[in-house]
Image (tube, rainbow, N blue to C red; front, top):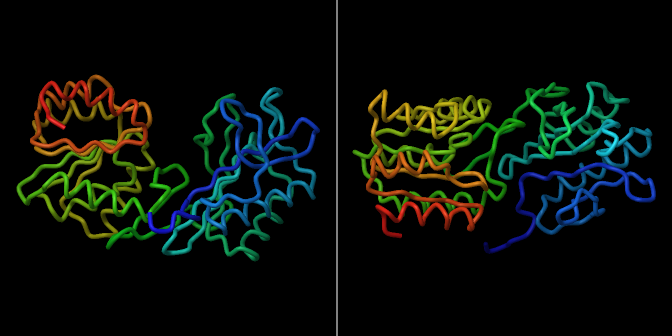
Length: 308
């Protein structure tokens, strides 16, 4: 990356107490949930940092309790901020342990007036879990979405949907994936773990048809909306486990891809998906990975039929 600073479009700050009983936000120490206070990070978006610390000052001033993991009490668990790097639209997600935030309307007014936050969402996570977001969202301001632009395309981003945190490099990454796939107008492309449809939409103009699969239902809703926004007609999206939907497409609907692009989570591909890929034997498989260890494991299995 030419300028590898302040590139992240998503900031996630845990909120809690330190050993001295002071409210802190920052990052977790390695392999612990001890919060290391951090006021400056050279890869975070600078506006997101300012907003996070404005919320931090607000909760300290108003005496709003941070979440206590051990006792499972308190209110604010995480502050999550998403920024459209090209649109400059801002989403703020307040992850809470219960439904009420004291001084909620004052907090919302401050974020809107001082930082021009486009939408503010309250996410309820009352479970004893390491997962940051719960399943219940309440919109406090705006419409619950922001938009960003990658390449020639516009993407709608929701609180729950995955979007590459480095959009500058994501655009380069997608173009490399398409180049490596050596696509043509007769190709049927499967985009596995498609998120909000970014890779499939990027590839759609090069192929006959794209099928995107993603387990997060909200992401698939966004993907379908993104296809409409960008007037893409040769793409279909399916919500569900990749291993199950993939099997259904090839076994029941008899749709056979000749190119597959995968961008799985850190755990990599499941065994059933690998079996399906080996059974269908598309001419090319492009593997995008955020975890080299699981990628190496999966590629070793795929080498039964493929050369890297």
